[in-house]
Amino acid sequence: MAKVPRGRPTAPWAGHHPVTRAALESILLRAVAGQGQASLKERVLASICEFRALTANGGLGRFLATAAIRKLGEARFALNEIGAMDVAAQVSTAITGLQRTNSARREAELLRKLEQDLLAAGGKLDTMIAAYAARMPDNPAPRRAPLRGA
Image (cartoon, rainbow, N blue to C red):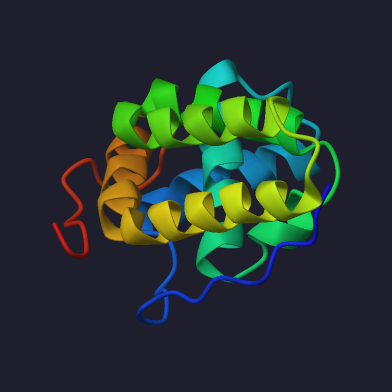
């Protein structure tokens, strides 16, 4: 896989919304305590949060340096699950392009474009992730917690 130059967000990312952080903390605490397996919804939330954080913090290129198509497929699934269909479509376009090229230069272009698209969708995506997290059955955060930027 081609080396992808780090993208630059237009503004520093403030992190996940409080409701998202509360849901993630609950998932992680139960995992550390060995209290059962994570549900599909919990795995989706953890996956999309990791993907969003990597994108916002310039780590997407390193993350996708190996097994990019598989990792992007997992991200696409999570994006569809939270209702971010337009962002999932952008990931699908990148996957298709990666499957059809043998050029390291073209791979880098595709991943750079995807990273730019993901950064542009950042605030909207954060809000969608927070809404998904708020619907998690075991989320200890108040259900009506205000969303930053919403």
